[in-house]
Length: 164
Image (cartoon, rainbow, N blue to C red; front, side, top):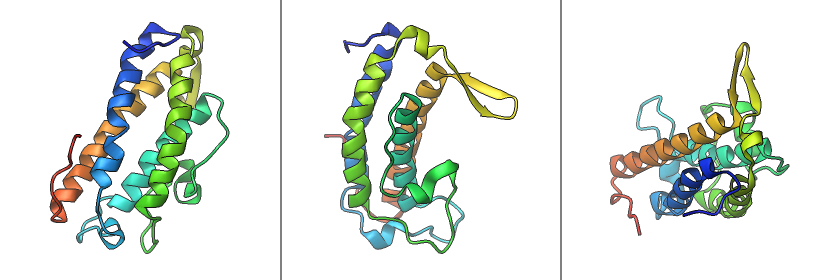
């Protein structure tokens, strides 16, 4: 069982820990050229998905008081979608930032109080959610993006993602 300030965060931090190594596993050995391919679709490619995943961890950390950002922040700030004709950064760059933010965010998630989890966060006109809802949505979205990256591996002819 995870040691957390709020018992509500025990399962969340466990999922966070489970998903953390999947970033390296799902992007393993993919060429930079392939990270930019959309295969004649409008789908988000690996280069954007991987960066968005890293950005999400940084964004969540910022909601918890951290002030840093990933190296590729300009590509993703303000929830910027994929841009046509743009060369996205390397997986190595994203992995470096993933490795940087992961222990910082884990510590923040482990130490957030029940009171803080109830704080409302404005998400847009007439829409807000609690910090706890944002955190749980973010953990769900991480799994979703990892799944998309795993599908891209197969579509591009790579072996399936390993889990160990």
